[in-house]
Image 1 (cartoon, rainbow, N blue to C red):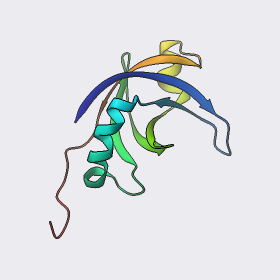
Image 2 (image 1 turned 60 degrees about the vertical axis):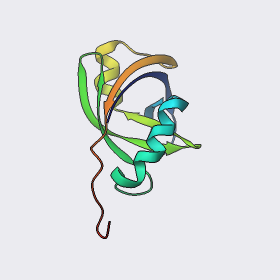
Image 3 (image 1 turned 120 degrees about the vertical axis):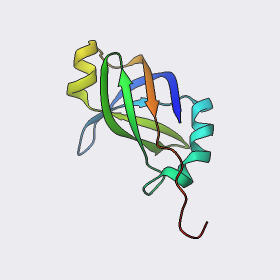
Image 4 (image 1 turned 45 degrees about the vertical axis):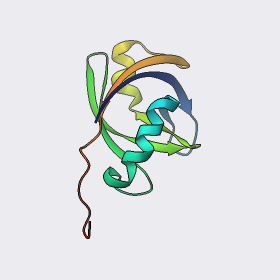
Length: 103
């Protein structure tokens, strides 16, 4: 599944600080249907992401009923000159649904 959206980039200060992009609600509706057949656990969806000309592998993480994209701060952000908070155009590709044993 391929998707394009713009979402808010924000910084999370925790034991392992990270940057995230909020996935818009309309995209999350589709992701909720996709998660049971592509998630590797806890609703986490592996994705290939492109921000500008920077490609990287990351995950969509469930957060407050929606999803966020985990962004490697040193990579895509520095190359694009991004500073939080801001809206970030993002393209992502989730794996094709796989069949589960017993289906």
